[in-house]
Each structure stands twice: as C-alpha cells, then as structure tokens.
Image 1 (cartoon, rainbow, N blue to C red):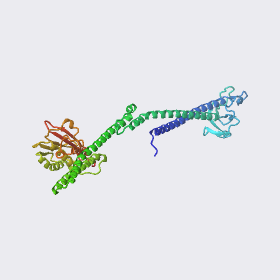
Image 2: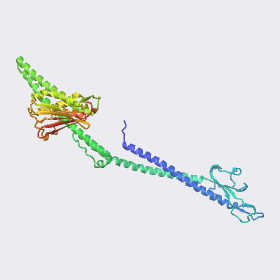
Image 3: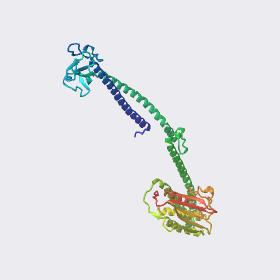
Length: 477
C-alpha cells in the first residue's frame, strides 16, 4: 500500500491553488487589456470618422455644391487592410465613400448590428456617427443646412496581434511566477514539516531501555506540535508505568509462587523418602493439598486483577443492572463477620434508608468491600470497631471503611494499592495474604470510572474511601 505523504499533498494543493490563481489573473488581465485596446481602437475610429468628415466642404461654384477632398484622406496604418468609410447627407445622398466600402452600407441605415464584422477576408470594427456638422462655412448656400452621417471601419489585425502578444507575455509571466511560487512553497512546506520529522526521529529512539522522549527545540516551540508532544509524553509515561508494573507483577508473582512450590516439592519428596504409616501419608498429602489450594487461590487472584485492570480498555460490554450500594456493603459485611468475630472486632454499617444505585456487577462491588473490610479487620485490635459508611456526594456515592488500628505509615500511603505490596513483609503465610486485596479493589473501582483513596484518621486509625458515579454505565469487566 502506497504511503500517505503530507508533504506531497500539501505541495499538490499549493500548486493547484497557484495554477487556479494564475489562470484567474491571466484571464482577468487579458480581459482588461482587451477592453483598453478596444476602447482605444474605438476612440481612434471616432477620430478618423471626424477627420474624414472635415474633408467635406462647399465648392466655390454658383450655386455652391458639397465636395470631398479625397486627396487629403489619411492613409491606413495597415496597408494590407485599408480603412473603409462612407459619408452621406441626412437625406441619404452619398458624398464620399472608400473604394472598398461594403455595398450593404448603401442600403442599410444601420450598417453595424455588431461592431465587429468580416470584410475582405479580415476582421473589421466600425462605428457610425450621425449629426456631424459641415465645418467649412465658406460659400454656405441659402438653403437649410444639412448634417453629415459618417460610417467608418478599420481592420482589427493589429489590435488582435497586440492582444495575442499580451496574452503570451501574461502566460509566460504567470508560468515564471508559478514556478517561483512553487519552489518557495516546497521549501516553506519542507521547512514547516521539519520539526515534525525531527520529532519522529526523536520518537524512534524510544525503547524499553529508554523511555524519555527528547523533544527537539523547534518541535517544542511549534504551536501545532505542542498537543502532540504532550500526548506522546503522557503516553510514554503510561506505557513506562504499565511496563514497569508488568515487570514487577511477573517478578512478584514468580517470587510468590516460588515459596509454595518449594514447600509442596519438599513435602512430596519427604513423603517419598521412606516408608511411612498411613496416618503420616494422609498428613503429608493434606499439607500438600493445602499448598495446592494456596497456589490455586493465588492464580485465581492474579487472573482476577488482570481482568479488572484490562477492563477499561474494552469499554462497556453490557448494560449492567442497577444495584443498591448499601445492600452490597451489608452482604460483604455478612461474609466478613466470621473473620471479624475470630479477631474480636465489631463491624457496623451506616447509610441512608433510600437506595443508592450504581450500575455494576454485584459480585465486583462485594469483592471490593470484602477486601477493604479484611484489611481493616486485620489491623484492628481486639475489641475495636470497623465502620462502613455510605453517603451520596453530588453525582457520586462515597463508601468509607473506617478502622481504629494503628494507621498507615506515611511512606506506605501511596503504595498500599500496589500489587503484592504488604506493609508487614514479615507476616507468615498463615497470618497474611499476598498483598493483592487492595490492588484488586483499586482495579475494580477504576474499571467503573471510580476512585479509591487512603488516609489516616485522627488520633489513630485509617480511612479507605471509594467514590463511584451514580447509575452510570461502567466499563465492562
């Protein structure tokens, strides 16, 4: 498939525009020149008509008669195409006419239905002037005076030649200007696209080893490229973050899988090392099954968080039903109550009586509340209380989980939602999880276009808050 070239299209567009402009200018200029030449030609015809009319005079005879001084007729500027004229009195009598004057002039009082006509194989232009007085007053007869009517025509060959020459000069000038303008346009377009080419070369140097986009100075100072450079920078930062998270996820997952696999392998090797009693076999196989259960739980958790984090990229895949956030929270509290009772922690709920509806899958939100409750119960002392509060704020619903634990270290506030992060890294696998609960909660909340935050309470305890849009179609997860 042939590549799309912005430069080629811009140059083509500029050339087409300049060609059309040149055509318009040449046509307009040629029309104006022709108009001026025709105007000058008509003025010349008028002057020539008056000059031949001036050659009519009264004779010295008695009685005086009108005579025409034919010897004084001016010569035509084009010997190959002589001027033609005819002089008549107002009563129609012919006083004088040129040798080649068209015979139809004698029969037609209006010889020029069109000022341009064909005569003797050439193009002529003529005019008729009436009411021209006889200028020679000597020997004027006593009879009433009569005016002259002059018909005069001249060949347009010279004028047409001037028009053609002018057209040639205009076309040559326009072609020269077009070539010059095209060259300047090409250089200007190349110069204008140079920052984009420099930006492309700089972008080609970005790799998994080098995520920094070095924006050239010209691209940075070009207004049209600033949105692109900002978008590319933001995109690279997102890609770098996703790449780093993916690498960390793989490394942490491998680390988390390493221990239970090693324990499982050690248990099975120990079981096979020597003959044992049935009770010992059952005990070792039971331990191995517990380790397999932990591995299975870890795998399901990892798949769940991966599906939740990829959901925003897919967009909405179904029209989800509206669910009551309060009922969803109370369902999660029922599931967490056994764990809370085992640690001597009380769970309470506070929320509005009317339903607070959001569009989501009930199991997704119940998983969020369950993870938040588990985290709060784990860090609460015996006899403490964990409070779940539901309230509306504008077009959103806010769910808060408040505990009375020791709070969160300042250095941990920005990391507790990271995958495999555990604030107490020394916990045994019996007392702690994999550090994926809060990460799953964040992934699900963000998939529903929400936000989750954590902060410390005064004087002690932690507050984890979730903000979700009310009855808004979420991204399918």
